[in-house]
Length: 252
Image (cartoon, rainbow, N blue to C red; front, top):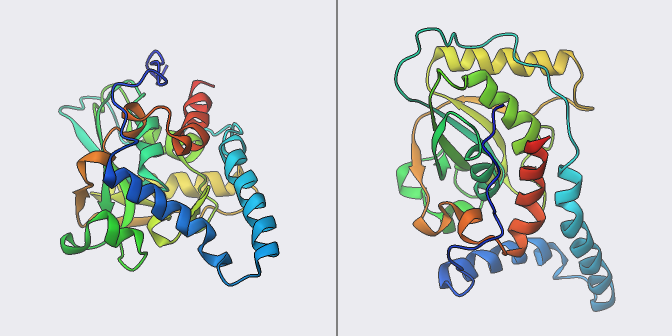
């Protein structure tokens, strides 16, 4: 098994609902949902907003569909692997991807952050504007003797996100939510490109994978209130709708 015994995600350790940073972030997400509607007439807006709410409320259920993926035909040899390694992936909101990879046996730590841009713009409010080159990302520290890089990729493509939607995951859209494998060396690049080709050739998904495979130039941790967000805010509505279905999917 690749996953740990499931934790009780619905037993809060802390509740950040009153945190100003969290409230600003949550309002920002909602503005991005209704922003395109602001110039429409009220009657039309009312109907469309209701539709959007319905879509958002079921997006987690749609993402929960189990996709059966083969193991990577090409992987990094685990024989004699020593010391912790890191992997950096981007696949939509880092709250959700962080929560998924935290559950895997062999994963020591997962940090939410930003990759793709420079240090000066690695701040949530700037990244959320969609005007930086950053993508919301996670840095995974893992034991390669217990879980391989290829196995991490399998979870990334099967559970953590939808790799066939361009610049969008669930209710979030924009380049900051694009799908990316940030490789740190030639071996990671080789395995990632080979696995994407393997999945596309097998037509596992009904459309081609849009995941970018890009050299890692830097990883910048996000603000503290983003770290372990699902664990610390288990009753948050975004978490309930978008993160929990992925955690349930991981068990399958």
